[in-house]
Length: 137
Image (cartoon, rainbow, N blue to C red; front, side, top):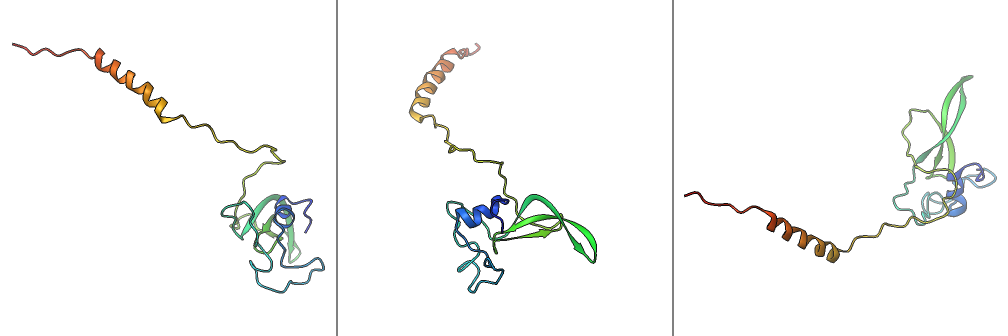
């Protein structure tokens, strides 16, 4: 797995420190998926599923000598990449290129007492501006 050419591979192997189901020699690792290898550590991510995630990289494979188009998919369950047909169901992770460098800061919430202090005079003014009704004789 080339962690320099795949952001998801870099996330999986380098940032989160997970192991793929095969070691660097290509041999299958002993143990159980999700415990000894695979998506064990999800870091600060919530709801990171051990499924295949589409990449934007297109590729092809030969099936009976005929080129078949496909998309490269990073498998979070095994820590490897595969080529799936464009119509296959996989997850998507919406990101943009590069490191944004700053944390997202939530907008300040307007305090309720200040809002109520402005609302009360407004309602009073509306009540005073309402024309009075006269009863007919």
